[in-house]
Image (cartoon, rainbow, N blue to C red; front, side, top):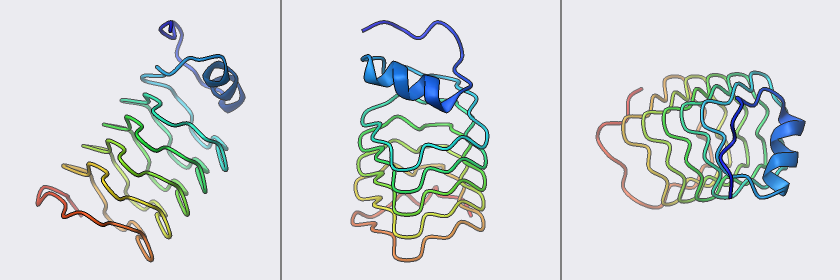
Length: 130
């Protein structure tokens, strides 16, 4: 597996590189990207910006989403099971119907996030903000 040398700024490019075996997309800039219904298991998007992105029904199981900007992102119906969302900013994000079982939300900002019908099976840290 190689390390992605350039910062990814296009959803189609990310999906193509992921399909080719790349998993490290640290600091990607994917504002308003459409990654709905895409399977990106165990992807590393640490410190990326996905503000206003459409991630509905995407599979981010086991992904590293720590310190990711997900402000106003649509994560409805997404699978975030086992994902690392520590210190992620999910302000105003739509997480309705999302699977958050086993996800690490320590230090995550959830101000005005919609979490209706989300699955959260394990107790979460008291450090969640919002």
